[in-house]
Length: 84
Image (cartoon, rainbow, N blue to C red):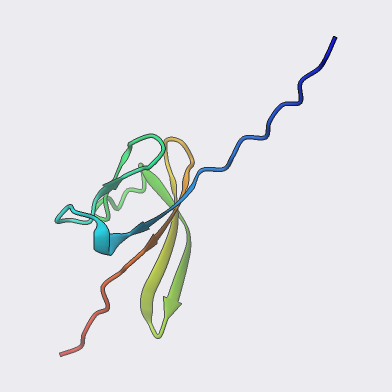
């Protein structure tokens, strides 16, 4: 009898550039399970913030995990703020 090796599960990791997101409020769907992830959702029911990257007091990268499937999503493309 031949035993087959179990293939390790591939981690779900995606990068989303907010500059390419077509919704007006910056919401997007998890690439794996389709859960809607919105920056307006402050409850973190649909995602968990894992890490942030700040350069010169500006958020440049946000790493989150989907609350439903656990997919790791790196969010880039934040608009720089301009002080008037």
